[in-house]
Each structure stands twice: as C-alpha cells, then as structure tokens.
Amino acid sequence: MAPLKNLAQLSLRHPKPKVVFSYGTAGFRTKADLLDSTIFRVGLLATLRSQYLRNRVVAVMITASHNPPEDNGVKVVDPEGEMLEAHWETYATSFANASSVEELQTLYNQLVEKLEIDTGIPGRVIYGRDSRESGPRLVAALEDGFKVSGAEVADYGVVTTPQLHYIVRCLNTKESSDSYGEPTELGYYEKLSEAYKKVLNGYSKAYSITIDAANGVGGPKIEELAKYLEGFISVKVVNNKYDQPQLLNSNCGADYVKTQQKLPSGIEPENLKLYASFDGDADRIVFFFVDEENNFKLLDGDKIATLCASFLHDLAVQSDVGFSLGVVQTAYANGSSTEYLTNTLKVPVECTATGVKHLHHAAQHFGIGVYFEANGHGTVLFDPNIIGTLKASKVSSPAQQLAIDSLLALSDLINQTVGDAISDLLLVIAILTIKDWSPSDWDSCYTDLPNRLSKVEVKDRTIFKTTDAERRLVSPPGLQNKIDDIVKQFPKGRSFVRASGTENVVRVYAESTSRVLADELALKVSRLLKPPQ
Ligand code: G16
Image (cartoon, rainbow, N blue to C red; front, side):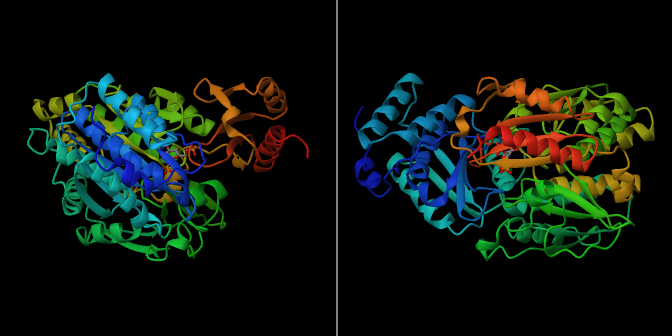
C-alpha cells in the first residue's frame, strides 16, 4: 500500500511525548499538553472506522468532562451514537502509542488489510469540543489528521457531548424510516421540547429550577433549550462562566457535588427547593436540596434510576403491552438503592463494570432498560420493537391510551444515544410534576447507606486489576483479603477498590451504617494502597 500522503510531514507537527496512552473508560484522557499526537492519530482512526462501516458517519468529541481545566480528552462515537466498539479501542491505543511515523504507517496498513477496509471510500467524520482552553489547539491537531486521511468532515463547534451523540445518530438515520431527528442543535432543542410538552399533556404547572452548570458548555445550551419551553420550565443558571475555562468544574459541577456530598459554590439554597448540577460536558446530572433542618440531601444517579424505574414500571403496567423493564447499575450504586429496586419495586437489577459503554449494552437486553451510574451518568433505552408494538397496540381504555402516549413521548424525550444532563433534567422534572412530588417525597423512597468515595494517588494504578464487575481485586495479590478483613469489622460494610479510567488515581468506595463509619472504612482501605513512607 502506498504511504499516506502528508503523513510524515504532518506527523512532525504532532510529535508523540514519552507517555503510554490507553483508551480508558471514556476515551483518551490526560493533561491537555500531552494529547496533540493522540488526537492527530484519532483523526486517522475515526476515518478508518467510517470507511470500515461503509461510509457511515462517526463522531469525535474532544472533552475531559468532569476532569480539571488543564486536562482534556478525546473519544470516538459510533454511528448510532454509541461508544466506540471495543476492538477499536485496542486499535486506537496502538495508534496512539506508535513510536514513529513508520510504525504508525505500518499499523495503519495492517488494520486496513486485516479488516479489508476500502480506503477508496472517503470516510465521513463530524467533531465537536467542550469549552476548554486547549480545545481549539487540539481541534487543529484533529484536522491535520483528517488532512492525511482525506475524510469528509464537519465541525459542530462547542457542543455538549450528548448533542454530538444525538447529531451523529440523526445523520446516519436521516433517510430511513427510523429517522432520529434533525441533525442540528436546533433539531435537538425542538425534539426535546416538543416531547416534553407531550409528556406533560394536561399538566400546566411550570417548574422552576436553579442549575449549577459547572462553568461548562451545558450552561448556554440549557438556556437555549429553555427558550423553547417558556411557560413549562423556568431555569436559572449559576456557575455559568463557560467563557472562563479556568473555572471549569472548580468547586462546582456534578462530580464535585457527588464526591464532596455538599453544595457547589454559587448556590444559596432555599429550603425544600430542587437544584441540579451538570458536569463539564453536560452528560451527567445530580440533583440536591436542603431540608427543613438545613441538611444537604443528594439525589444522585441511583435516586434518578429508582424514580424513573418506578414511573416507567407503572406506565408499562397501564399500557398492558407486556415487556420487560430492568435497571443496570455499577458497584458504586448505593446498597439501599439496589435493595429498594429488588425488594420494593421488584424490578431486575444487573451490575456491570464502570463506564457507560458497559451499562448501555446491558440495558439493551431489556424492553425498557434504565441505566444510571451513581455519579449521575445514565439514560433509559427503549427497544425499537417495543416502540413498534406500542404504536400498533389496540387500545381498550383512555387510561391505556394515555400510558401508551406517555411512553412514546418519553422515548423521544430521553436521549437514546447516551446519558444526557439536559434530557435527564427534563425527564426528572416531568416525573415530579406528574406525580406532584416534592424533592423530599422523592428522597424519602429509600435512605442511602452513608458512603464515601475517595481518590488515592499511587505509583502505578495499572497493577490494580479487578473481577466480579469491579467488586473484587485480583491484583495486587493478597490485597483483597486484607480489604475483606477490614470490611468485616463494619456493620453493613462494603468497600472496593478500582483504578480510574479517566484520572491518574485509584478510587476507593466504602459504605456502612453511619457517615463516621463509612469515612473510617474508606480511610482504612485507602491506607492499604500506599505502603508506609
Ligand atoms: C466517564 C465515563 C463514566 C464513568 C466516569 C468515571 O464519565 O463516561 O461512565 O463513570 O468517567 O470513570 P472512572 O471512575 O473510570 O474515572 P465522564 O462524565 O467523565 O465522561
């Protein structure tokens, strides 16, 4: 095969640093100044992915989501808006780690040959980025990659991650009978707002909510959406300085609120009123409120999952269509939430490894699959066959018709491609409005076991290997037994350790019957990870 035109010349502009890259939980993620070569090479890989899929459009998102401002990242999105297929993560990793232009060219040739990719097809790739300062520079590296691969490309500018997932699916379904919508930001706002109005059919109460936008891209986008929902929702956005990227995720945002279990800066709460926090690229959301005794109350991904599962379960029964509904969680799910789902709501619960890609696939096995990570990342998937059945149902009562209409509208309101803070916000508000529930009604469904999520910096996090959906360590040898011995000393104790796929840390999760005990358990397990200095 002839060498790629310009590869040698353009590679020189993007030299590889002496770092080993790995396509992690959500793509490549590290300090932004190390990512130039990786993103240039992702340009080549994304083009090949499109060519392999016979010219379907794939997307590239440049974001580091909840990470600090100096980080950045990149991930490839498949044509239906799903995460990149797992084998291709390995190819991406090998491209990123090629130590010379010659090696990169060889890897490229080998992949083309192995998968019989027709590189005569141009390849179509769209791309977008979050509001980080390093974004434009990294976009330029990506565009250099496209100059080498000759892809047909379109730049969607600063968008939320879920908007790009939505757009790529729309582009790929444009001509088909299951068209997902207009492949534009405008199309996204119109689709969500129209669906919201349909879900709320007959409920006229306007909902007012304050949102902490983490000083990220979600702020201007939710303000834009709110214009389409005047009279239905009223949104006040705080931490909305998306044009000051050094403030991104700083003392605010979904990750801060979840891990610190406290209010973000910039919020002076009114008791019993609902608030929400987005993360930096608006693919996660958590809610919170302050009760009458001024206690901070977190309504995280587990609470969202249980709220949605119970609401959808009732609609499923009323629709009389008969399909399975299940919930997918990870090991980070609070033990009380799993117990509530299993014993009170009586819905099946599955546990997968961390990472939307794992939850998403597991949720596809259900007629309606609700998946949420405790950190607020999740959505609800409707099996396309269920949609068909709902549409074709012979209706015997107005109540049944209402349930069917609601389910169909919900399948449009809920982003089917990936967890989406904006879509999830509307979903939760719609459910609370229809149920006429206050935040404390929602919170009182079950009581979380007190828990603590800590980060520990270690010399080499790659030695931490897990099994059983990340609930147990198999390496380093002997460490799991020591954790088990500590856990036994705590009532309702549970703790596990895993290496983060987005930050250079090891995460320690602990829960027990009181905050003090959960903190103590987390501390004791954390100490095991670091040999005494
Ligand atoms: C990403 C993934 C999530 C995951 C989170 C933390 O979220 O999409 O599925 O829960 O990272 O992963 P880890 O514990 O491996 O660092 P985001 O919002 O940062 O893209």
